[in-house]
Picture 1: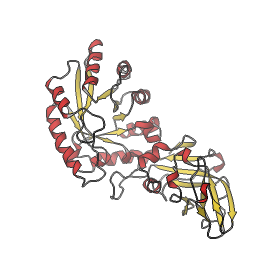
Picture 2: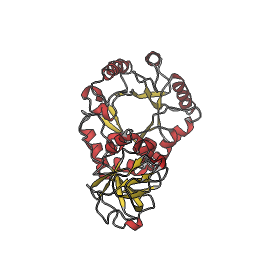
Picture 3: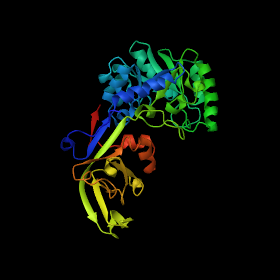
Picture 4: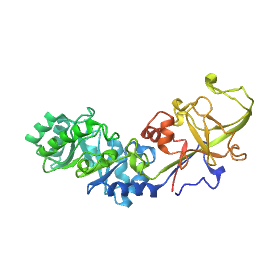
Length: 369
């Protein structure tokens, strides 16, 4: 494990530091590839690589051998293209009207979600005098993005003149729950759709779907949270290496008597003489009020609880049982890391790991190991 507290704590920024272990990230991609039953494994780097920095994350994955990437929006794709000039980059949210030229200029592959998008992309490629490429997304039971099975049949019967459909894809709604019956229903529907497009690759699995077994892997898997160290499947031991460590700075240490209250609405009352450490983190930094009274931090390996409500910029910790000398102003405490996993931090806040990562404030400095 490469994580370590910054050697020069005084040089850390006012809020704290997010350490991102790029070697662990690359290792997680290799592990997913080894479990993919021969399918190619693409990386989902949408939302600025889940808040960790798409440029540095994308480059680390490219160096590890990943050549295909998925983003959410055209703007994300344009930005990533500048960093990865040779990568294959697909835009999951589809082709918005007016984006055709930018998508072509940046050599992005649109994931077309309805027949109108197919029509517009076909027309744009025809006017440019070239045969373009696209993926199509067909809904199999999530009822989010994607064209209907009926529209997929119409497209297969009358394919566009100026567009090659390279991948047909769908998205699993309940892959994190391996026994959920919707997984099998979506698999059956997807097989029917794949048969309509025999010349295209097939993609159904996300991180959790890849681990459901060979039947779900097809030709291409789209891996997201597993890359960043989150547990892909509920209730299973997490096979992924931790990638993120978040350390927040202590702003003040204080002693309070028995019977004193802490924070807004006085929801926490001390039951003994208590040592508090107030840290530079709050709901503006991605730590929601739902973590009040439930969240934890690690001080030199000792797990300490949140005391009272999470406020916008501050959280009070009960550090009475932590070693003296480790909680002085300027010291750093761990909110995510070897002692407190990403999933444990998310559970304590009533969130999922995706929400925690994508909500982390830019006030925390990103440091890449």
